[in-house]
Picture 1 (cartoon, protein in one colour):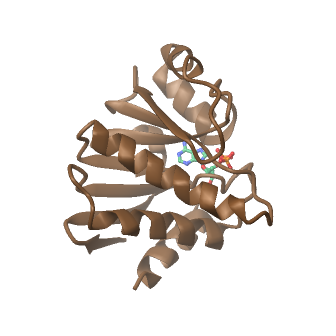
Picture 2 (cartoon, rainbow, N blue to C red; picture 1 turned 30 degrees about the horizontal axis):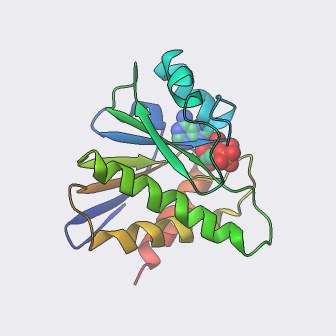
Length: 176
Ligand code: ADP
């Protein structure tokens, strides 16, 4: 499903973020050490090849909420943004850190004059963020950027499972 806010198209698809050939920037739900891992991080590193870990480790460590950008190597995209999502807890900083991941990734994509960016459900896997809360924060952060968008014309959430797709598309359709 998709919505348009200002000039920005925001869409949710179910799929694999390493297979988004028409997208300039993909976002990795990385860890602070930027040295590869499981989940979406493992899939992105496998598809990009060994150069990606060299490039990302050179920029480590980062804090929760921060993001850095590298080339995309063997991926079909131009750039990879690596975000360190927060591990879910009731600490009041955690939702702010998750929103900062999205905001910082969007800013890095704008710096590269990218037209499109794809996000996975950051922190909603091993890091344990409840899907409805993660979806609401993600969709709000992207929508907050919409009227300030410069080069970006399309933001795609690529959700791996039906359950995560349902949470994010529900949040997107509820956006006022
Ligand atoms: P985190 O540690 O930030 O929670 P995970 O990689 O464990 O990150 O999970 C984040 C989300 O990415 C989960 O919803 C997971 O199902 C999803 N995911 C796993 N592999 C892929 C993939 N290839 N493309 C898109 N999303 C993926």
